[in-house]
Image (cartoon, rainbow, N blue to C red):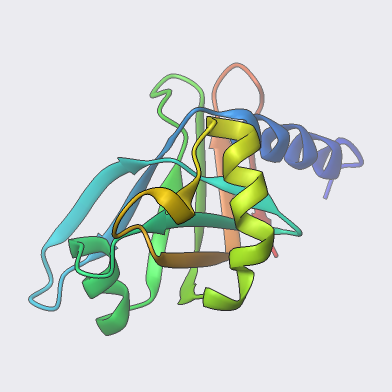
Length: 136
């Protein structure tokens, strides 16, 4: 791996963390794909999203936890592939992070009670910021 590769990955993760949203891809039990944008935060090496328990996304990861996240820029691509898990224990940490990033208090928004952590397995990038493939 070239010496610049870890620095590039760090730069891309910072860009991901600062992005207003990401695309969240999951798979329905019947094999059909589901893709939707969502707010996210990056914390301690994992991505976190907050959703309602009955959403397609939440139902999908109960069946298949393999997911992909991507920045919304189709010209400068950054994709994270990972394993999603429910993380209710992270609420005390997530509340201030989502408040700071989005000025949103998840505790006072009815129904947004499901925290999902995405532990990255692989990242891919191409475009003007550079190219790379990384395993976590």
